[in-house]
Image (cartoon, rainbow, N blue to C red):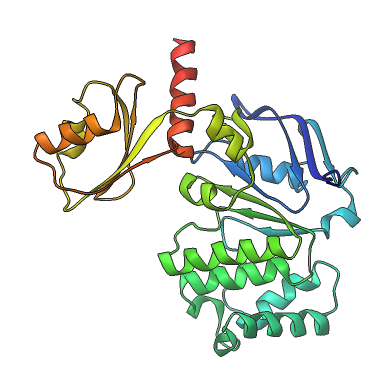
Length: 313
């Protein structure tokens, strides 16, 4: 296999605002052609890290390389940036607002308008081209923001919390768009606090918490490294007492709620899945689905964070 090239190399980057260290000695490599997850809870330091990569924050400790070079005027046009806060001009026509952002990336107004039109047609959005941005739904605004980030055909996409505030249909659209961009050879840095989505689409990940790196590497290898016994439970009907009662089963280490009826149970080595099922039935729960699985990225993250907190006490 040919050696993978590095799109972004961050070496020991740190940034402090007053008494708060938003990013604390963080290093990672993003390989070309992969979806790289920049993960962590809200306030972890993800957006600050992105702004350092994009040179929106110029004063920081450490170094950043983009395709082997320091940031420059030429480098910035390699990026397609999707900010967490939507940046389209609300009173402009949809097609003009997106095309304008394309011109800021070095392409002509004619080319930007042509490419915006093509992408809007591809995404079934042409009916909105003469509407103003503020007239669009949140999901459609986000689609237009995505279009504005890829008009100039960038090699590297940096999307900060692209799923924020979206309904399930719009979320699915964004996921499919990321997968398509990867198929087209793009490198994507995806910042999100949604571990479930990251687990679906990311190749490699870094998880940061309170500015520090707590997990890093290939997602599959991370899950193997932190492998524990885990089962997914789906109840036949919602039961608000499930977590309280299931946690009383000897050997259950952690319970994560996926939705109103679905839970992930992490348990110790001495406990067998069939014993868990038997105990749940004894407690009167009606089980629709019961399956063994590898631990989720969310459960691994929580375990690592809790372990760090314990070590500091």
